[in-house]
Length: 147
Image (cartoon, rainbow, N blue to C red; front, side, top):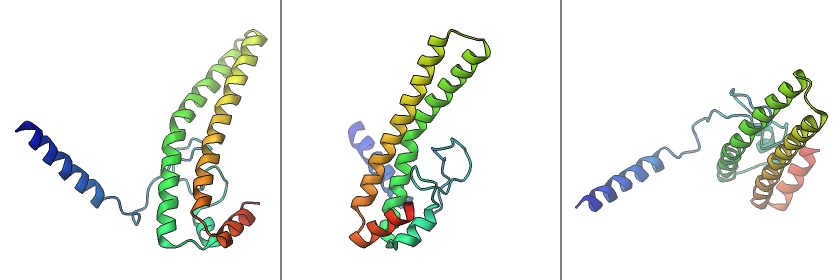
């Protein structure tokens, strides 16, 4: 009997989540490039405004919805990398302020560089996913706008 009750609660939960899954509601974003907790209008790892990219590429409503979901997933995935990056940068600053050994400073800079590379690799992956959903004309417009 408990299994049936849990199953019903799960169905109700999924139904309520589906009701709130519309793309029409504005979402407060965390900007992965700058690690700011304010409204971020940048698309993926670019410095381009989301709305400008959508306008320039001529995306349909369903494409815009998919792009926003990609953006949200990207932000969530890079959040932990950004937390670690912030920590490692603080450690580096502490090493520099305490005149630590050059080898320690060098290793810390290497860690930071690797974290930035990881964040960039994540971005490239999501950008590829975005480009897959574009038509040839939209892809050309996106590439032109990015340059």
